Image: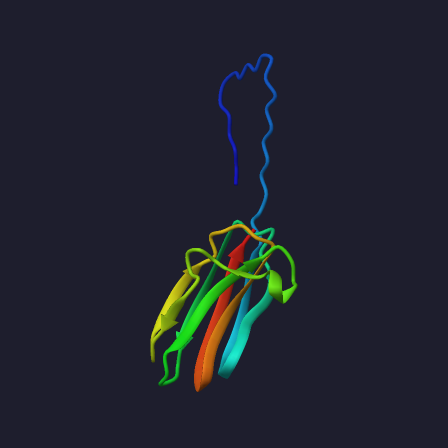
Amino acid sequence: TLLTVAGDVTITNTMLTVLVAASAFTSLTAATQTITGTGELFNNLDISEKKVASLLLYNGGAVTIPLSLQISPTTVSTDYMNDPDYGSFSLGSSQSTFVVIGNFAHYARLRYVMGTFNGTITGYYQAQA
């Protein structure tokens, strides 16, 4: 980014700070995998230094997948709680969805509860600092 100032600039009794920094981009993929029972994708994902973060999910199987985005201040499993915006949602067969990680926390994960059914899911995490 280029900043150009033409002419005279006078600043009196004011502190001026200009910060120009690149934004780091992060991308992770949970390759297509078969899931059953209860488990997590992107477990203990550190989101603490991200300004923008999202998940793109695709259900490649025939069974609906019950999901919840969970956030936590620690990596201790019992400290995780459901995100208020995506605490419980379902991803139908051959469907995809976009989930914005909009609440601030240190860690995030995507939890699935399949019971005895098998599902197939692909997940992409993308974030920018």
